[in-house]
Image (cartoon, rainbow, N blue to C red):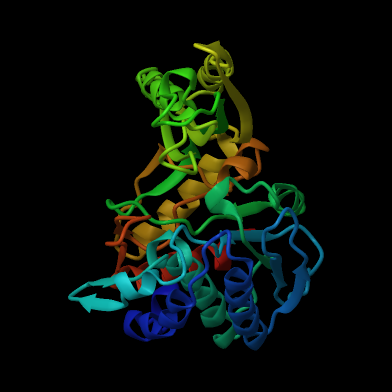
Length: 376
């Protein structure tokens, strides 16, 4: 079968993707995420998949696992791993409304990563409509918590990946049409400062401000950034009354490194910040961590397969190791051949200007179909 002849149509795909984008699904809103999972599950059931729902835990939504009919069903095959949660709160659609401007289309989560998830299902649909039996069975796993580090579903992702020969991750594509063959390591940290309260107007000097200490530590944390390891604080909460010296302040920090030993050293530096200064206790605890994924022979062989398909379709396919963790960190670290960044091209992820390049829907859909149709 000639993949180039499959009737992918970016315009049709875009209109069908709209329902996914307008079904807002921020990670912490379980009801919203479940609504998105329902939408995807129904679409895959229509295509012909057998759907399994796995209950959520730790306050997150559940998981949808779809297995498509195949003579070798149950044997090692191809896992498509994607997340349906986004960073955009419900109501973002009012600020980042669906809109088309030339070859760009905007919307919350359209780039990271609903566009990639959708085009993957379109690739499967096109192959089924063409009555083409892929060499290997296909499983799709959609999860609810990637944007916060995948704390509740890592075990399911790793177990499912281990039952398959290949993992394809339709996270956002690169601006140069590239894909991702490795990811940097990422660690998250929880920060807590505990001071002593007092009346901010009458007895200010007797209090010890947790907010002040948190501010001091934030500057110290971000100043630790080097070429080998970065540090950033992205969440801060503190105080309750403006006329009270704050007793507590909390925050969340993130560290990223290209090599695992570098991250291990960064973790040590962060944990060493715990202690007491000026009668204010500061505590750092380690949160979820994504291991470094370094490309091995299996991943590079998978990449070369994809590159050959791209060449046959008239485009180049560069590759890179990248920051911005994904669930490919887990599968790649397990040395399961993994190819990431297979989603739509676009930009401005996690912002109110998030967009995809419309023509990349069909282009990346064909690439995905080519992989599904030839991997053995």
